[in-house]
Length: 478
Ligand code: ATP
Ligand code: MN
Image (cartoon, rainbow, N blue to C red; front, top):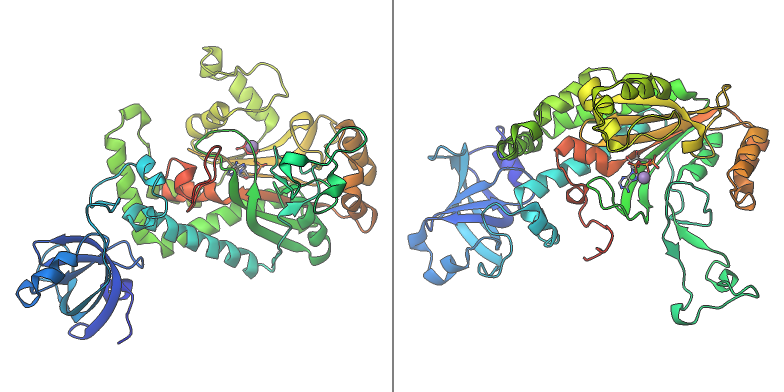
C-alpha cells in the first residue's frame, strides 16, 4: 500500500473507516499507546493508537522519539479531545530506530541557539518545519508573481570577474596554492596564473548582468545566492543569502516603487491563504515568547496582524530630505538618544533611525527615495539637483531594509563621469558601458533579501533561523 501524506489524513475531506499507510517520525510516544507521528507535511501530528497488548515488549521499546516508522491502520474519529481523527494501528514497522538517550531533539522546548548547533536535526522541530515550509511557499509565489507578469527568470553568474558591484566585501575564488602564490614583477599575487587568468570573486549581486538581459528581454528577474564577506554579526546579515533582483526596461523610479510594493504585498497575501496553519502556529509561538519579555520589548501587533497590516495599507513614500527633517526634529535626536545623532545632511541612516521612522513615527512600511549621491552606488541615476540619485529603500518594521533599488543611470557620459569620480576600474565595466552605447533606455530594478522576507513572515528574530544551514563569520559547519 502506498503511503499517504499525514496532511491529507488530517484534512476534513479524508474518508474515514478506511485503511491508510503513513511513514514518518515519532514526535512523542505516550502511555505505551499514543504515537504522535509527523512526516513533514503538516504542522500537526497524526495520532496513531496502538493496542500495546498485541505488541511484544521488544518492539514497543523501539518506538521512541525520533524513530522512523511505517504504519498501517484504520482512520477513525478520535475519542480524545486533542484531534479530530486518529489512526488505529494494524501494522507497524520500525524503519529506523533512534536512541532516545542520545537523540539531541527531545520532546521539550529547546533554545534556538542550541538548535543552531544541531542544524542537521532542527528541521524535525515544529518551529523549523513551519519556517521552512513557508520559505518554500514564498519562493514558489515569488516565481509565480513574476512569471504571471511576463518576467523572465535568468541565472546570473555566481563567480564574477567584476569587482565593481559595489555592495561590500567579496569572497575570493581561486585555485592558486596559498603556500606558494605566484608573484608578478611588482611583487603582487599574479592572478594571470589563476584559474580564470584574473581575479575572481563570489557575486554580491546579479544586477549588472540582469541589466544586460532586461535590455533585450524587457523584464527579467534573478533569484539566486549572493555572498558578502561582511564581518557584521547582526541578526539581519548572512555571508551567504538569497536575493531576488528584478530588472525592468522602460521603468522609472515610480514604476519601480509601484512594482516592489505590489510584489511584496502579493506574496504576503499568498502566504496568508496558503500557509495559514503554519502562520497560526508561529503567531502563537511569538505570543508565548512575548509573555516572557518586558512589556516595552513585546510586539505591539501579533505576527498575523502585522502581515495583514502590510498587505492592506499603502507604504509611506518620502524623500531622503523629508526623512532627514523628521529625524533631525525628532524627540530621540533632540534628547541625544540616538547613538548616531542626525546633524548633517548627506550621511546614511543607521538602523536606529530606520526603526524610528517605521516603528515610531509612521508605524508602517516606509519607502525612502532620492538619496544623497555620495552614499549610493555608481550606477544610480543622478537627479537634476546633482546632489541626489534615484534610489529607493523599503524599510520594514523589525527588519529595517528589506528592499534596495534604483533607477539606473542610462546616460553614457554621466555614468562614465561617475565611474571616474568614484575611482572605479573602468576596464572591468566595458560591457556595462556598452549597454549605454547601444540602444540605451531608462530602466530600473531592485534587490529583495529573501531571508529578510522570510524573517518578516515567520517572526523569527534571527536571520540564522530562516535558512537551513546559515553561513556567518566563523561558522560554516554542515
Ligand atoms: P544593509 O544596509 O541592511 O546591510 P545593503 O544596503 O547592504 O543592506 P543591498 O546591497 O541594497 O543591501 O542589498 C539588497 C537587499 O539584500 C537588502 O535590502 C537586504 O534585504 C538584503 N541583504 C543585504 N545584505 C544582506 C546580508 N548580508 N544578509 C542577508 N540579506 C542581505
Ligand atoms: Mn550591507
